[in-house]
Length: 206
Image 1 (cartoon, one colour):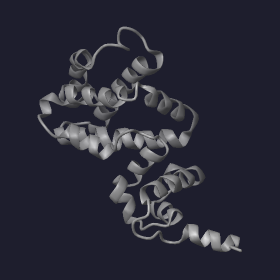
Image 2 (cartoon, rainbow, N blue to C red; image 1 turned 90 degrees about the horizontal axis):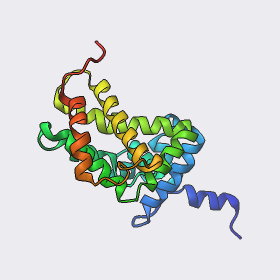
Image 3 (tube, helix red, strand yellow; image 1 turned 30 degrees about the horizontal axis):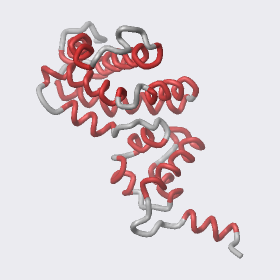
Image 4 (spheres, rainbow, N blue to C red; image 1 turned 30 degrees about the vertical axis):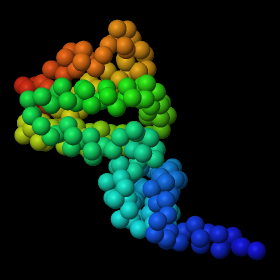
């Protein structure tokens, strides 16, 4: 008969090569984030819980933020990949790219995952911290920094307010005609505002 200690040892022990480490990390991350919160959870603790090498977190998710995005927020994209995609290309068309990428991601799930994300943020402080870290630091701050404009954090926050507000109206409140407008229409209408937030003149904090 296998004892509870032996079972625990099997769970905590290092997984052999070829095991499904990605899913193991996602399951372990949900547990550790729930127990210790977003800020208290560490990559090492999550990897230990999953029984894998900590390097696998960077390999599969690019770091703690990406793992949180997939395990708790269940975002359909990797934040680091999104940031790189948006930041590459002409700085003068940033606004258009941001709006198109945002809508393409959430439209692909019918808006349901965005609505679920809003619910998770409304009910859990941990989700608020994680979402802020991912959207502001990992995506919009990275993009704003590449423009060389001043007040990068303020600009990133303005962009976040625009996109999250657009998502609320389109996917949660479902106000028409915005809820059903095509991406080209939305990019033409909202893109210039996002562009101004990134590169234009704004009266930000000194």
